[in-house]
Amino acid sequence: MIPSAHIDTFTRDNLPPQSQWPQFLFTLPELQYPDRLNCVREFVDHWVERGEGGRTAIVSPNETWTYMELHERINRIANVLTRDLGMVPGNRVLLRAPNSPMAIAVYLAVIKDGGVMVATMPLLRAKELAYPVTKAKIALAFCDARLSEEMEKTRAVASDLRRVIYWGTKGFDDLEAMMAKPGYERFDACDTAIDDVCLIAFTSGTTGEPKGTMHFHRDMLASADSFSRYVLQPTKDDRFIGSAPLAFTFGLGGHVLFPFRVGATSIQLERAPPEELLPAIAKYRATICFTAPTAYRAMAPEVSKYDITSLKKCVSAGETLPKPVFEMWERATGIRLIDGLGGTEVMHIYVAATPDEMKPGKTGKAVPGYVVKVVDDDGNEVPRGTPGHLALQGPTGCRYLADSRQTKYVRGGWNYPGDTYIQDDDGYFIYQARSDDMIISAGYNIAGPEVESVLLTHPAVAECGVVGCPDEERGQIVKAYVVLRPGFSGDAALTKTLQDFVKATVAPYKYPRAIEYVASLPKTQTGKLQRFELRNMARASAQKMAS
Image 1 (cartoon, rainbow, N blue to C red):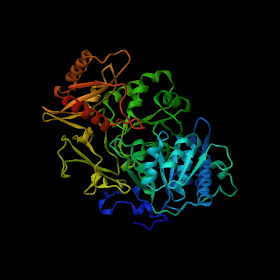
Image 2: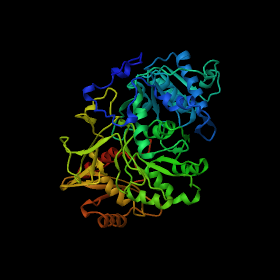
Image 3: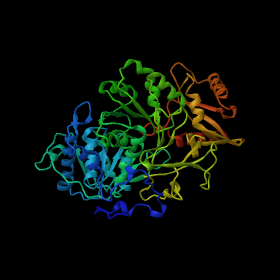
């Protein structure tokens, strides 16, 4: 490793042993970075130094910042960190805020100053916030004053957290007042190594206890110089919008890394559910949208109410993109969704395809810079058309913060994200299921998401989740948890109708032998279905029936 700029060596001390790292590939010319580099210089300072500081960097309902204005605010916060708060390179800093210009400025200031950012979801409660504070030994936090209640509760239960700086209080000691000091407008970026940790991104907890994924300065650039450069292909005239929180790497890419890498504009909305995202696309003339399949499905019927002719490209990620949703969005807008497979461990998307290359029902191909394959339990590549475990290598990869699960995710130098895929003869990857979501019933392998995709095309079904339910006779049966649309009743007649509908659409053995109607599905804060919770529900239901 390159000599670190970190005085606080916590992150390097808690990286997994290098023998447990994936093999990193830097095959593209864009991925050949110098040994010493602070990524914020590339994302923000670069444009000011080129004389393009007058370009619009961030637009929000309340304010608009140029790159020069963003640059100065980052510098002022970095000076606050160093001069007023005594932060040293390598310190971890927690961020608690909705998506906003100030949140982005704080995020980048910490990194420019050589610190390590730990961003969190604004809806998390004190118990949830205490976990990353304790795990990452965080002493300092920045917080939007409107979210102070849970932040103060966190201080009471997390002894590591010694100071919280608020903004938006209009007080003499808030962040804005500290930033206003004379001479704080200039700041030289910390001389960080390209492999100094600058971000600890905690996973969303879809499969249990969150894991802290550690990312280097080079990782921030690599995600922009692979997926964004070769698949998304933005220009400085683009205007990015999306619903994902800044706290998650999907949102970080769409809000910061991808637009700022090309000098484009980021549109910041504190809340962006489908009913607000669609009118915002029209109002702010967005050209690129990042959100989840469920949002596209909800927005498609409403598209005709708004002028979204500015919109050119749309990225779907966070969960598998059902073919019906792809087709629904294309019919409504004429835009072919870019389906992206990525993950917090690998920073961002590593399987996708350009709109022209997208094939409905298929995720895409390996993003340039990555090698992706489908393998058996021993790591041997399987024949095309055969289901197996997805494995990948590239310029980014998994390094968990002091976590024994590192050896589960990385094996033999390859990242194993836990997905079952098929690769076809043309190199396209076709999603089957999370590896632990594959239902084995009477010897048949059944992918729960495939059954979900069918059920979602029925007019009675608003949402659904499909998992395996323990069964004495068949080992497992397919069980569907269904949220109905208004006007439908979850009775025996509808159950038979849905079962027959599935039988008529896919192989009959895949139909859900049990259907339970629920008011809502368990989801993470980012809207991803928590399948492990559904599996727990199914297991408890089976045990109750057996007793």
